Every structure is written in C-alpha cells, then in structure tokens.
Length: 422
Image (cartoon, rainbow, N blue to C red; front, side):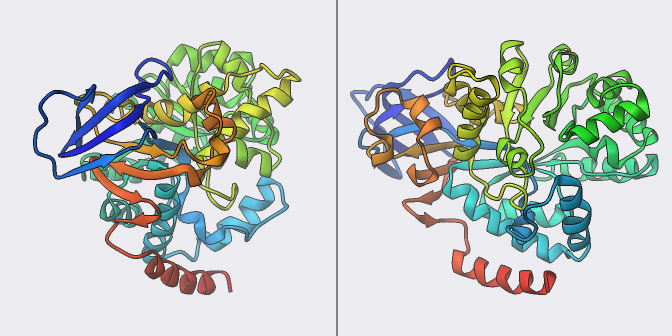
C-alpha cells in the first residue's frame, strides 16, 4: 500500500472541486480518499504531498506514438502533401523493431507530462503492446486499416488477438479514414461492429478538402454518410472533427459519439479550428488528443488544453467562448471514457490508481486563485512531479521507473532514425 498525505485532491468525480486530505492505493486500485483517520495501517511507502495536487492522469485520446521518428522531418506543408509525400513513403521502411523503439521514446514524453494512456493508431501492434506493457503504461489500440472490404479480416483478427491480451491493453475497432478506404470497407466494418457490439473510431473531417470530397462521392458529409451505414450503432467517435457543421454535431450527439479534438496538429497543418464551443454547448462529448509527434510536434496535454481553450476565443471573437475547465475534463475524464477506460477516469475508491501529482508551488502556477483554470492556461509539463499508472509510480521528480534508462532508449532510436531518414 502507498499513502499520499497532506494533499489537495481533485477527484473530478463531479466537476473540478478540490478538497484536502489523503489518498491510499492498494495494488492497482485506490483504496481510500478522505481525512486522516485516527489509526493507520502499515504502508509500503508514505509520500508527503506537501499541499500539492493529486488528480486523474491525462489520457491522450488520439495519437500515433511511433511517429516520433518523423518529428521535425516534414514541416511547412499542408496535410495532403505532408501525408502522401513526407510520411507514407518513410513509414513503408519501418520494421516491428523500429515501432517498439519509437514507442519507447514516446513513452518517456508521455510519462513526464502526466499521461498514462494512449489511444494509438499505428502499425505492428505486437511491438506497441510490448513497449507499453513493459513500461507499465496503458495502451488502447485503434484499428488503422484502409483499402477495401477484404482488409476488414485483418481488423477482426487484431481485435480478437488484442482485446484481452493484457490488463494494460485494449483494442477498439477503427479504420484510417473515409478517404483512404472505399464503401465496401465501411459497410463491412459496420457489420463487424454490429456483430461484436463494439464502438468504431476514425479520422473524420480533418480538412475541408476531405470533407468536401466525401460529399461529392456520397452526397453527404463523412459523419452523416457513416451514420447512414449503421457504423455507430454501438458508439465510437472521430478524430479531429474540424469541418463539422450543426448537422454533423447532431450525428455525434444522437449516437453518443466522442468528438476528439487535436488543436495543435490542426493549427500546425492549417487544417482549421474545430467547433469545440458549439459541440460543448450542444452536449457533444469532448476529448483531447495530440495526434502524432510528426504533425504536432509534441505529446503534451498541457499544450492541447491551452490551445483547445484559447483558439475558441479567437474563433468566436469572444473571451468567454469556452470554459477552460472543460478542456481539463476533456484531457482527463473525457479521454479515458472515449477510450473505454471507465475504470480509471476519476479518482475514487475502487477505481484504478491512475493519477498524477502537480507541483502547485511552481512559479507559473502562482498565485493559486483558480487551480483548474490555471492548469489549462498557465500549466506546463514541468509541473508534473509524479505519474502513477495502475498503482505503480512510473515517473517521479524527473526519474523514470520503467525498466530501462532514457539514455538507452535515446541511443537506440538515434541509430534507427538515421537509417530510416537517410
């Protein structure tokens, strides 16, 4: 058992209220939250939080982790050029061992920023599963197939293989995007989802070109077209959702889908500013993701929260456009629920012990007038003092506890990057 005491605690069970007290973990679960009792059990370790903040960890609800190898490699070009000329040709060179190595590099960044789960869409899932489980971090795969109906067999095979592989690993049905696959694939994915009673996820309406060309092909926007196929009978969601109008958001509201925004990537690639304010006001469920480290170029939830909040103010010419605390919820509770991680969304007795400690004494968080808003608008990954996943401390005060040194990871990836991008 681990005891955290002298803590400020933001459980996020019902908003962003903060109480004082202590939190205990037992194995991979939270066993107690409350005041200090008169009698204490024996603990393996006791941590004086010194008035700092315990809160749910961040969950990255859309990413391509192993794209660390292309960070800062393809810059200053629009999405279609970036994807088809700068990314796909180099991804074709990847080996399973490369993906394992580049995932480990991403994990260093995730844990230092308080992220304990990644909703990852990429190649060689066996490699990613090994990298994440060895480090002790959660991984939720999102199916990434494209092409035609015959490719759905591979999706189903991976789903069956990885859905119960490990307590830290989950698998969600998905495909890359409407524009990289044909109608036969979309219909077959819908049939699979209905047979398995599973949600489906995909990139959607990321660019105006993608959105408009779908309308030309099918007479409907991507969201409306996919709904017509029965794809979301059991839920799911989409990544980016930049070019969503009121009818598209109604599809998401009607089907209980997750609107996963990636504001930094959408800004960098000039894809646009997603209508988060409208979605929030209409009751659409929100989550945040980074997208990959080649299109962002960071894996930093603080930057996503900040941009998610302030770009709405700019989009609407309204400083009150979207409450900053809603971005904190989207990056934590929303991300967990979008990924199907309902057991580690909030801090509560019996829930999984996925939490972080924030240094409230840091200069950038002073004075602590409104802590939730401060985390969004002035917080930084450097404020993360500790990251715990499933009851294990994986990062603390700049030190990693993942079974391998950062130096070893960096040396390995440097050699692989030189080979791949030569």
